[in-house]
Length: 414
Ligand code: HSE
Image (cartoon, rainbow, N blue to C red; front, side, top):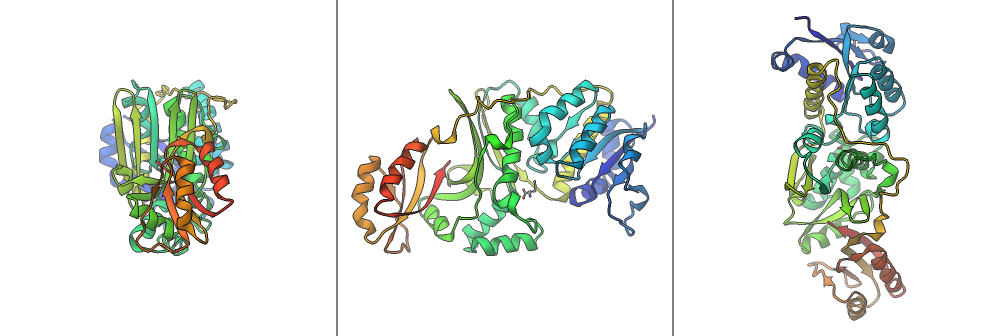
């Protein structure tokens, strides 16, 4: 039987991992596909004169698009400009595309899935969320019988590494970020990771799959971890919580609420013990209850593992569309509820001259609060956890409190 010929676009970390894995595990991959898989092109504008794969390199996208032998392409370039244009043209030519590009899927997933369907090929993106963790197929295949209630997850390895360093080694945010950059986890410009945009894109993909409508990044309330301090980490620990950057999407009676923000996660919640660059995603369905997915959320070979699995599926289903995704486009966001209308409990840190004298006022204001007994609390500072109530109502009451105290931080609980 003639082999399947494929191409890889982008020879960076994930691209080179994919190429090496295709080579290293070619016998296993052949068994799954029922035929040899031959890598014919690697598209990249850079030169790699020392690479053992240099004979496959091309700088010309048309080589791939116009080669009738190419049936599947891995788009590992990232971004939404060339990646969008190339993906659309490949799918329109009936060539399946697999990708780790969460930015593209979060922005154009509904559209590209439609293009694939109408041209009898597949657009697959298992590697776009959670690196090597199987989560896309489980969500829309294994868990397809469920009505999803909620998805909560640690979706970004870089920020989880930074927070782990802050929690366990008392390293400041800036120093932990520097370490993450030295280890190659964080980019030189770490904005997408530390400000929550990367996690937001991943939450959009999970939410769109689970709830059937495209959730665009602008539908998600997003805030990152830049302003978290060692004081917050210590207060949280004293109260029995770990601070994590959590992507959360909840299905309420009046719509979906989607947020990416730091949260205090109870030590009883398994997400609290997900450390370093690991990711974890907890999915709650009405039939199955809680299911937890855990593993390496980033990195060369973990991500390549998911990319190659998609390549195998694309080859196995060549010539027919295998996707039965419930993912419609959504131009109006009426199914999304304002995040401040959701009920939440909040960690609050304040400072004032005579902070203890405010305790009675705070208790009167909220009915009941848990004051956090911190070991090394500064005299002028106080932290507490509010009862569960609508976030807008917590804000209103904190607005009154801010007349007699300085509000230093508020962080939602999970
Ligand atoms: N920058 C991402 C992270 C890479 O740190 O999780 C994987 O998507």
